[in-house]
Image (spheres, each protein chain N blue to C red):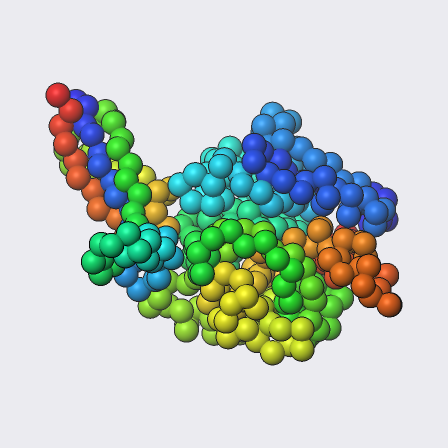
Length: 272
Length: 83
């Protein structure tokens, strides 16, 4: 597929944010990116016209009941069949922050045995409590399965901002070890919180900003085509989005978030 | 027949409760001898059902499908006949 033919759909509902930044990131890489309200997608029934789908960040439906759950159940009720076909055909889905919460609540992640009717994980209230907005370091853990990070060498530390109140990744306590092993076995673990040298946070705040189990930042499905993470790669796309750009002698040419968008776009170019 | 479903969703004790801990800390600051606080959400749902059993089954389904995440939440259900 030629790059300019790639079509990405960025979904929007009341309370989502950074949809414009995500669109800008994709357009900067030369692909078509459209921001669509989900009502429009329900009306047009055209989800399968797109090559990739993004659930952006924000506070969809006011984070009522639990962050992401209303959007997850609503879209499954309206577009469940299309969404499942989308995943089964191997078309990529990215969930950023609130989008990650949506994918977990919808049973699209971790999806060890495929999409589940009930969530197998949770993104719970941060520990320590409160909204946390800061730049964090995240270490790439994936061995190449995740199509959103295949360009990033394993072990590389990236820098991106988080901004959330419910980002504490949890598995059911009684299955914690078993599920973690499965993440490793299937190469589904994508990023863990670390310091800038790559030493894991081991739960310590603020290196791990939300108390996530095993310092988990983001995971993908067993096929590597559905990926969710709490930080915002679209807010770390350009070099000038980095917080210390005025103090650096040698700034990199781009922010680390760009690697995620590039990985996806180059995957689509090769695969389809 | 109308039934009122009183559903309470709370965190499983195996998971920490940052909201509860924050409330407990402040209550202690205010001078109360508080040993602990657990935060839960209450939903008061009015539905139509043919029996109390059906109303309870509906409430359980609502918890599984939306109100609770089995990874971290427990729930209790009380069904009352609406007069």
